[in-house]
Structures are given as C-alpha cells and as structure tokens.
Length: 316
Ligand SMILES: [Mg+2]
Image 1 (cartoon, helix red, strand yellow):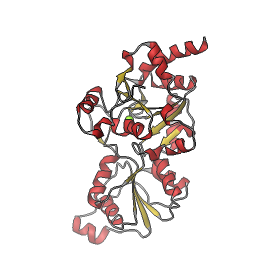
Image 2 (cartoon, rainbow, N blue to C red; image 1 turned 120 degrees about the horizontal axis):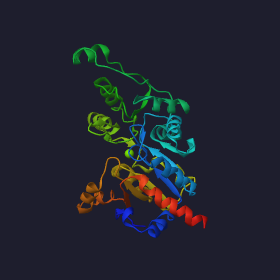
Image 3 (spheres, rainbow, N blue to C red; image 1 turned 45 degrees about the vertical axis):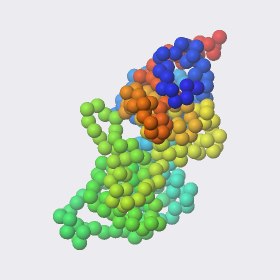
Image 4 (cartoon, rainbow, N blue to C red; image 1 turned 180 degrees about the horizontal axis):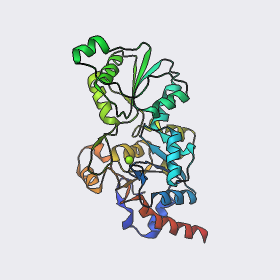
C-alpha cells in the first residue's frame, strides 16, 4: 500500500488509515528518534506502540545501538512504559554475537565498542579483548617502538560505538585486519546520533576510519542489512509484506524495509525530514529511490487517534 509514495497519513481519511492499519500484522520499530530521544520518550510513542500491540500486532524493537545488550534494552523499554519482552528486541550487539556463533567462531575478537558487545559475546562463549580507554602514550615513535603490542589469536575485529575511540585502537584494528583471514565486522554504520544542536559521532564514523586505514570493507550486521532480522523471516514469525518498519533514518530503517520487502513509515522526530525525501524523489540516482518511505507521519504518536478509532470499529 502506498509503495514508496511518502504519503502523509494525516492527509488520508479515517477509513483509509484504518485500511492501512489492517494491511500489516507485525511492526518493527527503530528506537532512537522514533520511540525516544536521548533516553526520554517522544510524546505519544509509548501509548501508540502499546495500543498497536493491543490491536493484535506483534511488536519488535530494532536498534543499531550496539552499546546495550538485549536485557538492558528491555529494561529501558519497560522502564519507559512499553509492554515488551526480551524476545521482541532485535539489537546489533546480539546479532553480531549470533553471527559469529553461527560461523562456529573459535578465536578471539578485538572489540572497538562497549560492554553491550562484550557481554553478548560472553553470553555465547566467545573470547574477546576488553573495552575502555586505550590512550596514546608518548609520540608516534615511542608508541610504535615501546607501547604497541598486538595480541595473538585475534580472528575478528568488531567495530561498534566507542566513546574511547583512539589512534592506538585504529592502529591495532587495521594491523589485525591486514591478515585477510581476520573478519571485519561493523555492528552498524549510523554516522551520527539524533541530538539537538550537537553532532555526536555514531559507529559509522568509527567504521569509516577503520575501513579507510585497513583498506577493507566490513560485514555490516545492523540495519539496513537484512541480516539483523532474517531470523524472524526464516522462523516465519513475520510475513515481510505484512510487516511495517518504522524509522526516523531512511538510509538504515527505510532501506532495511526496502531490502526485506516490508512496508515503511518514516517519522519526522529524528534524522530525516520530508525535505530530505523530496530530494530523493527529485534525484535520478536509483539508490536514492530506495530511501523513499511508503508513508510518513510528523511523529509516531499522531497514529494514536486512528488506532483508537480502529479499536472502536473492532469492538462493534
Ligand atoms: Mg533512529
């Protein structure tokens, strides 16, 4: 329905929105910029998701944020009032550990990231380096001759969000990756975080730095790579064409929807706005066309009155 037309749901009649609500059974929502911003819920989001669940939709939270485990994301969601279970959380930290586990990975992982990743690796029994500061000591010559020590048995470099990103970490990661057998995995490639009046680098910025000096392309686990939610399709927990992907960032969320054959809803409470969509609509680049969502809402909470309507219809 409304395939890649960026139809504003607020321009439709109640009957039309009701038909649209009936066109999907599962909802996969991005978190930052859709449900909450910087830890605070976005007005109406909690109620909207809970009411969608009440309406019989299966609900999934899908985040590229690699700093938290599924358990931590669950605790955060429940704390904010969302009616969710750990089963409904799809995270890159978990998906990264699951990816290595599926490959029967038995070496050690060099981690540029946070404990969200290392705890998920621990959960599947995969050995890894520790996270935290690895600061430059002395000048370059001193660092190279005295302080730079590479560990044996590193079989993968995983790069996620790391607030202690540093020159030594870059040097080590690229050196491990000079062995072509060493896996190069990026949890996600989001360039920055949605925050008012500040630019906060996201994992994608660190990944770009590593891939530039390693001269290699990473395997990207997070959105828009279908790897992050393939298990849901394989286990028949969702039917792609009857699944709605909600997001605030087109090059991850909407593109994931495009790549998986989901319906897509862009909300204007995060990264991308209608003005961005207009540019992609005007563009002649076919890649840009993939970023155009089916439908749009200024914020997720705008859906609430329509859901309440649908419930009245269902109950009569
Ligand atoms: Mg987002």
